[in-house]
Amino acid sequence: QVQLVESGGGLVQAGGSLRLSCVASGRTYSTYAMGWFRQAPGKEREFVAAIKWNGGSTDYADSVKGRFTISRDYAKNTVYLQMNSLKPEDTAVYYCAAAVRSFGDSYRYDGNYEYWGQGTQVTVSS
Image (cartoon, rainbow, N blue to C red; front, side, top):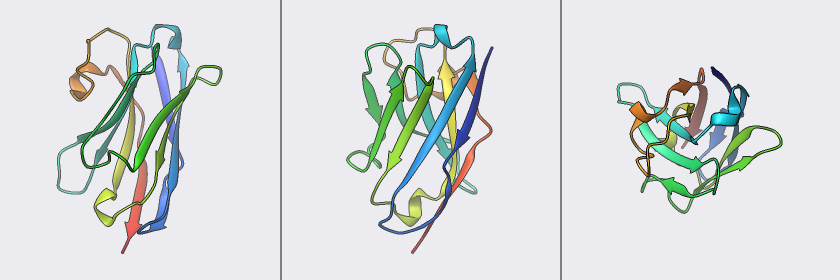
């Protein structure tokens, strides 16, 4: 089992920045990848960014590429999402996810992630 706890959400004006954190505990030694997804009201959950735990390769949704950066800290079992140049359309609940089974490069498919955090709200005002 892997437990995930997100933090760092909040209210920010358009153009501002936030950094989300996700601390993993439990059987973290078997982590293959970690990702961030988001869900806005009335919309389906969508992929934001992901990072391979060993090796550090990353993937980003086109909508956030160049504005968001995902990173991880081995020592702290933590993954971060640095969000810059935020837009009102970035408003959503952001979820951290962890995968322990290898799935190649299919980072964007939420079904590949076995463990999920409770989510943290990000609201960007115009």
